[in-house]
Image (cartoon, rainbow, N blue to C red; front, side, top):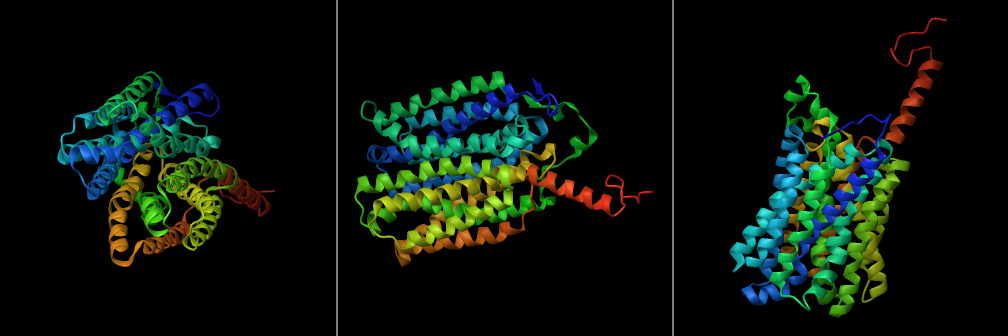
Length: 430
């Protein structure tokens, strides 16, 4: 099952089916990842856990996700997409269901770690598969579509679904039911997703390509460094906002719930909108715009009191900028910056750095800062992360096809006007 990546006879039907299917599957993955959060109050009572436990449960998944994103991303570039993609979907579905049988913190932690391994395996391979199924002119848009369901299903609708189900089912049955959507997605991916054509060529250059060669590409290195700041900003915002709103700003639980829901909906819009915008204006201009909007919103947020509508708007825009940046720097830019044989390794490494340090270390550090200096101090950590990322990513090379095409056309015109052949570089003879 192989696909042809030539743009002359592009298979638009396959592109549409692949992008939609991979997007739905990523949404199911996100639902499984975040399901423990809205159900934790009842899980905590049943298993005699404490608040430290939920931090550890999210941390272990983030660390294992990050490490195995890098590992499986590299493996996929050697053995193909389907051999990693489909088992990973089956795996995270089963491990999510096994949480229903947890009898204590240790088994719960083990299932979360295993879930992180296979979810980490799915993520870079799905990005590469989406890119390879997409026409170059729609690469940013399609990757945004594929990634946006993470916020929409996992962070926006997931808690609503889980809490409604909790009215008629125990938390154990809810985790058991969570197996079904993933297994359906695994079957559909098995039927639909194809291998890209370059896996069938077996050239010597591809056989000798090592995943470590991604470090030769400046954009990938800058994506990894910049994500230290972006992930720190985002995970601190997503993880600490509820307690900041209730304990520092003294919002009620219902007010906090309304304001916090903005993170999921804003993340959906940003992860879909920013890559699509970058298809038209270029990757770097889109990032610049996002960074300006983001820092303005953060500074206003730091000086906003108990104003729930304004907090909702600010969190919506901050999440849109944060998620948009995540997608651009974990998926769109690194994938475009490398040759086909490294398209899964390239997003895998930034995801690894971001998840391990942003998802694992940053929230722990933020908790320490909040305990020692007060909850308001975490807003400074968000500002530092955002500014750090904006400085690092100024040095990215543009990868958007529309910008590269304009640059090439301009180069050819200049060469022709100066009497130099635009193709061979030799002087033209009149």
